[in-house]
Length: 308
Ligand SMILES: Nc1ncnc2c1ncn2[C@@H]1O[C@H](COP(=O)(O)OP(=O)(O)OP(=O)(O)O)[C@@H](O)[C@H]1O
Image 1 (cartoon, protein in one colour):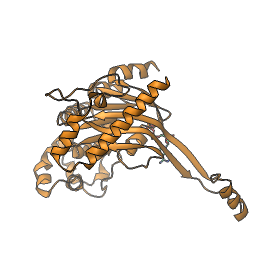
Image 2: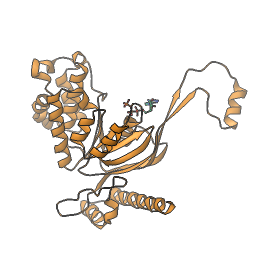
Image 3: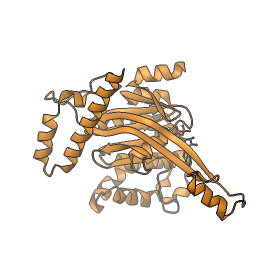
Image 4: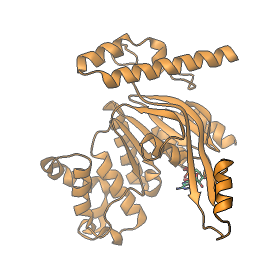
């Protein structure tokens, strides 16, 4: 048992060193050399029990996200009671006790996994189990209390709460969103109609010229997904967006997610819709109380989750 753990740790360290080497590599040739030199076991999926597919030449796939013993803690400052004085505050400092008014939530507890290019990874678990927190930490929006996250490229978190400007029209938000994702003016113009058509916002009238605050939550979520999905991402993380669209939109989204994966990206999908996870993902992580309970083929993990 201890040997297995030591072996796993050694593999993690090797993977991390290789990713750091990749980060430092100055040219595409140097990166290709490092990737070619990677021992196959570095590319084998830890915990999933599956060896991820390689490329057409049989080379092992490149890791895009390495999460290593990640812990994320929220500290919520609750309203004080007004009691206490400088002496009690000093005692707390000296005794290294936290403030009684700080509520600590340990939302992610020691999660480790490696995701690869071309994978779609579903994240499932009950309410409050830590799924969204995990995605935010991978996107770099929350700091790790302990452990580390390594990513290849800039991960994009697409949530139903992603910030668009509610007072602006849907159309203006398509332009803003495209620019914010790094597209040029011309590219945004070229893709504008495709984004609007994909979202289906104009299917029942000219809604795209109305302010977004007049949209239903489903319409807003569809437009957000359509804007984000217009670009190719190294790592795209989607939080529940599919749950809010109708069946036709969900089908289009699943198709687009498949394309994004084929374009060599990695997609993470948080959803309470088990069918979406089964249809869209090949692998799933089951998170419960902040811990990784199971990591494996999506069908097997969802089956186990449904059995409870
Ligand atoms: N901003 C925050 N401040 C403090 N605690 C938080 C915050 N966000 C989430 N939490 C807590 O962290 C834990 C994990 O929440 P998280 O939103 O990651 O779960 P989830 O699995 O995505 O839940 P759901 O399925 O309901 O969306 C919960 O106990 C939640 O109360």
